[in-house]
Length: 98
Image: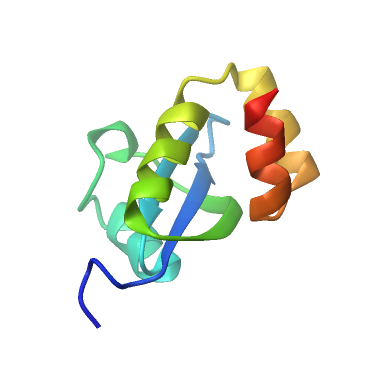
């Protein structure tokens, strides 16, 4: 399966210091391991105890990129609310359209 036809996921990681990082990938567990091994986002380098606190199957890469952009621009308070609600894709799209 090529990267263009792969199923993409949006995920949010919480660090031990309670900061949140949003990303996209075709394999959440592989990407978490990369982050834990300091191979990936500069934002997470050196952080310990990374935990995926939200993930949702998005489908295509284009939509995943758009959702990632939207969530990265939310306030921390709004991201925390999103994590608590843990919406599926349809409800995530509705929340972000508000």
